[in-house]
Length: 138
Image (tube, rainbow, N blue to C red; front, side, top):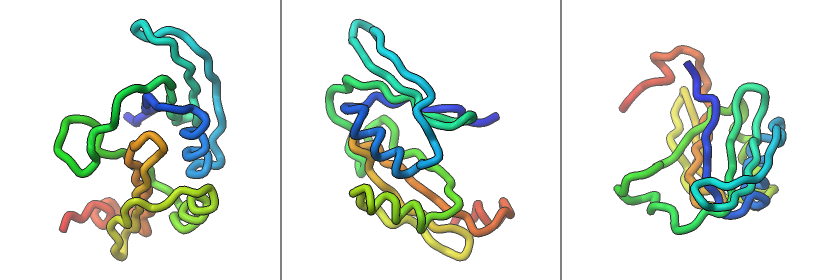
């Protein structure tokens, strides 16, 4: 089993796409369109590769739950990357700042960004393929 996609409601497709294009330069817009979802007109795109993608849907309304709070909702989602330093450089060049410097030890390093809608996204690089070393809980 694997996670195929996340479906995110966003404010602005262009701003959101710019963030994820900086993070995933090898991904492309696979398709898109527009339609009605429960009485609301929406434009949508699928941004990803042949195996994984983000479904981004515009016309979001309201505010994101506070990231530092305990309200129900998405706290963050994470992607494993092979070169965290390259990702950091791409994000900085595109104008996106690190929100949180995550954990770091001999087996992994991570950073968190907030996308233009307020979704918190973690990027982690592991330095080992051994599950017992990747999954240490201190």
